Image 1 (cartoon, one colour):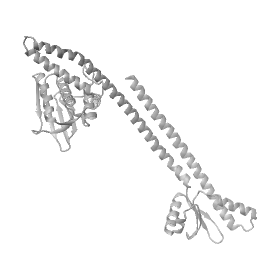
Image 2 (tube, helix red, strand yellow; image 1 turned 180 degrees about the vertical axis):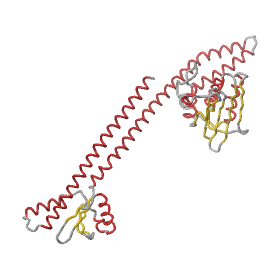
Image 3 (tube, helix red, strand yellow; image 1 turned 60 degrees about the vertical axis):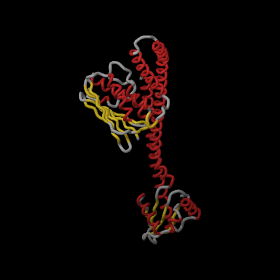
Image 4 (cartoon, one colour; image 1 turned 45 degrees about the vertical axis):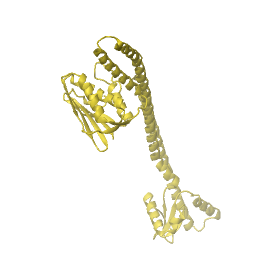
Amino acid sequence: MSFFKNVRLRNWFGYILALIVALFIIIFSNSKVEELKEEESVKISNYAKTLELLNTETDIPPKTQFFLVQLIEQNTTIPVILVDEKGNYIDSKNVSKKIISDSLKLKEELHEMAESYYPILIKLPFGNQYVYYKNSVLLTQLGYYPFVLIILVTLFVWFTYWYFKTVKKTEQSLLWAGMAKETAHQIGTPLSSIMGWLEILKTEEIDQKPIINIEKDVHRLQNITDRFSKIGSTPSLKKEDIVEISEQAFMYLKRRMSKQIGFEFQAPEYPVYVSLNNILYSWVIENLIKNSADAMKGEGKIKLQIHDNKKNIFIDISDEGSGIESKNVKKIFKPGFTTKKRGWGLGLSLARRIIEDYHYGKIFVQNTEINKGTTFRIILKK
């Protein structure tokens, strides 16, 4: 457990570090964007002053005049539109010809520029002019950068989480498979010997009734071994009557449990076919019924109900036991969790694996109440 805790801590440390780095980059990029905005505003302000100077001063030396024109021409990135007092177009730089040639688009562009920055006034003897401008394409793209970064960091964190979760699930699957197959092997070896001895005993002139009962239990052990051997491999599913299989598992345990426990089976009176692995599904039903019996401490009522829906089949197993504390409802399906003094806490974890991983269904606690009972629900697709 400490290993998994350390892995989780390292994962969380990695996520937090990634978020801190992303936050730093966002703050840094925002500050740079603001600096560039200021620089572009200064450039356009100088651009406007240069235009004003060229149109008001008549005694500018040719070299100075050439230098001022060059200053205007140096603006190759910032979109600028020059208009008169009435809003009539005079000149532009870095603006699409399609916009300039279309009066409606030009009006929209001027409106957009006015929302970005207040137009700069140029006072001239023959009438005032206004310089409209907006951010350069580069500056606009840089403005989107923090949002793109947030999306990338979010995707990175999600992918990392998904990857580690998948790796962990794969490791658990391999562990389950290894444990189950080894258990099947360990049971299978002496079981073969017992079956051999049973065949010998059948030939002896002794009472055969105990031998028949032993043989039934041996077949039962064979089924258990078969169940374990199927964990970890992909079990074959075929259309089975879930009513019949559920009733068989239910009645099998009814015959072997305390007479003080009442059993009630409710299901449609017609076959309901579902894609199942008979052996593994029966194991789940038996597991849930045994848990119910343990929760009731040998007294009470266990009810199994099957509801036929258009798309799904609902199997509810209810008891009148001690119930499950709310803090434990989400824990009961985790490997190793148990409230019993004995047991490995693997039964419900195996049940979830069989129903959800092999049968593509769902299993969960439908409702529970302390000292009144619990209902487990299984949902399978038809």
